[in-house]
Image (spheres, rainbow, N blue to C red):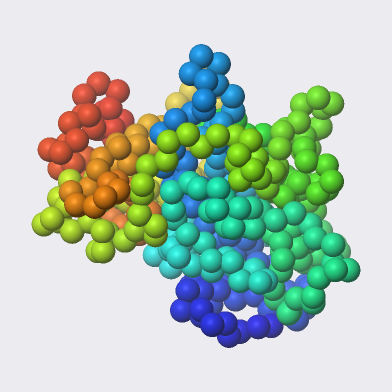
Length: 415
């Protein structure tokens, strides 16, 4: 395995916290769990990157009367499916006894930018940046690269992969080996009642959560991830909307092809806000010179971290006993989690990017969320979020009022 690279300082901590060794016995349970932990990080690293590009787009397309899909909706559909993939990977981890081995709200797990894509050969640096054809082509399409013709490419060192599909192929081999060597006993470690099995948040995306309980359902989960990302066949640009139940005529484009349509100019970008690349709170939003941007960025990061924390809580809350027309804590968490993503995070981010920074340049730069780890208090997280929102409202009154960010935060559970 390659252990040293010229940019080793940008390697995510998860590489050492959950190390994978391609030479380790395929029947090693710890190695399989580590592979899935890294797979979860891989999926999670796409979400801020794609959202940031999406937030930079002001318009939805050329025609305001009957607009086409457009870059904004294409990227949104990809983010939705990446959130699904993140849940599918965690379901896989739960199914093999690794439920307590991962937390999304963790300083060492939450992605930082710039950083290297895990196990990518050749190296691919990931960035937060405004949506441009170059960023989409050089980073996003490379991240979602489809299966390659191995006969025309140089050999890849052990532990490195050209595509996400190759990485998941390695995961699949380990799952199959453990399933066979244990006679299926590996699935006795499953705590199925904690898996995420509903997708209320799905929007413009396909597929759905899979309750993983055996090798077949595990393979189904990975089939959704790989097909939606890179596609089935590079020569066939479309995939079924539901990869597990394909219906003739009900197809969509995999992520690689969606991004290619943007890079080729088929789907228009429209007006793109001039956002900083890889912004950091300490470097871009000084509380003395940029109090407006500093306050709303703190609110965004806190809400972003609270969203990840709520997902952790959902995975620690059983759905057993959930019945129609009866109150259920798990159901309440799932529904408010959706409101937090769609009603709070998106609104705060869109408020930020429409706000020019107080700097004098030829091209006015706008504020943008930094997607950084924010240390929430051990107790009173909801009250802390409300306080941050009230502070930001001094500069952004639209965060308050009916059906506002503040209104939604008051309806969040204090988890």
